[in-house]
Structure formats: structure tokens, C-alpha cells
Image 1 (cartoon, rainbow, N blue to C red):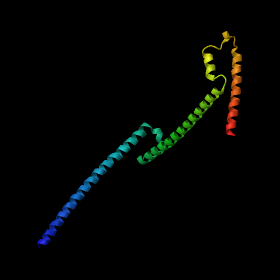
Image 2: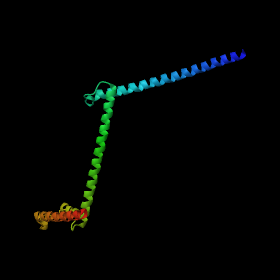
Image 3: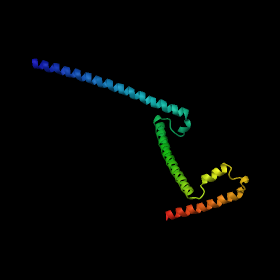
Image 4: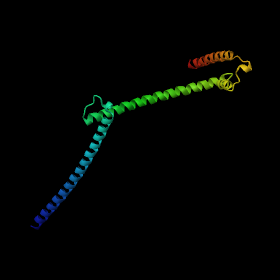
Length: 162
């Protein structure tokens, strides 16, 4: 009889413990559920705010929050792709410009009168009528020199390409 009472009391203790554990789990689930509801409401509010402020972004998009969220996600993905393409184009343009600058600097080093020197002569007024230099003749000389330098450059480039 004593054993039966022991078993019965231990069963009651196990049942009480299971009930407490079950109640604790239920309380945890209720808290998690409430937190998820608040987060979901925050998402809905923010999406509604965007729709209100920028309705042009949601033309032909349904009223459901999930549709609007999907539309926003696809828009952001599309914009990220465009940004990557623009960045790539920008990098390529920068590289082409650096190459051109390098080529011009190399060309300038190989020429008899550097372009920077010609520009400084013009800026400093060394090339004017008082020096008995006809500016038109000088311009013609510079143009001829440029043509020759371009020919040398393109011959040099075509040799390298071959």
C-alpha cells in the first residue's frame, strides 16, 4: 500500500511538473507570437508609409502587403544590378582615361617641344605679335606637329598591336 501511495504521489508530482513546463512553454510561445505580431505590424506600417509617400513606385501593384513587399524587393534587386553596371562602366571609363593620359604623357616625353611648354609660352605671353611671331603661322606649325605626332603615335600603336 505504501508503494501505491508513493507511486501515486510521484505521478502527481510529475503531472504538476509537466503542467508547469507546459505553462512555461505556452507563455514563451505567447510572448514570441506577440513579438512577431509587433514586427509584422511594423513592416506593414513602413510599407504603407512608403506607398503613401511614393505611390508612383507602386503603379499596377496590388493592395496586399506581401505584394508590395515583393515589388519593393524586386525593385531594389533591379536597382542593385543597375548600380553594378554603372560602376563597371565607370571603372572602364576611368581605365580608358588613365590609359589615354599615360599615352599622351609618353607622347609628350618623346616630342621635341612638350605640350605643357607650348601652353606655358602662350600663357606667359611669349608668343605674341611683339616677338615678331605670326600667331597664325605658329598655330599652323603646332597643327602640323600634332599631325606628325599623331602619325608617330598611331604607327607606334599599330606596331605594338601587330
